[in-house]
Image (cartoon, rainbow, N blue to C red; front, side):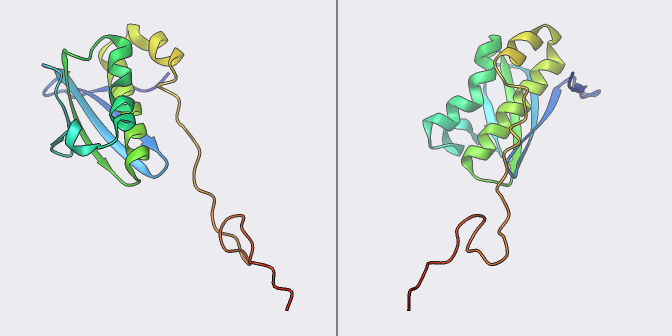
Length: 137
């Protein structure tokens, strides 16, 4: 089970999500369904619809889409990695808020860390796997 956190002063649920090199710190509180990422609305921050859907997926699965405000600080990585990190952070914060949603979140794969990382460059190669182009002469 994931360690859950709540802010002692405000009562907000906290969650941290990671994906590739992106790290997202998520804060959830009761509200009207506003999602703010790095002081910008969700629609402004993510231009691709897939990334926006990835962020709200856990909220919709647990039925908290319209009654929770989400504040996110995310850094590192690209848009896809950041949306995956936010998704995991939201899931962990929802778990801190409501422990009955564990089976829904676990069954949907929201609490599983995607451990795939970029492979390092290797000596004598142009990248991780690609070699140099063969030259006959």
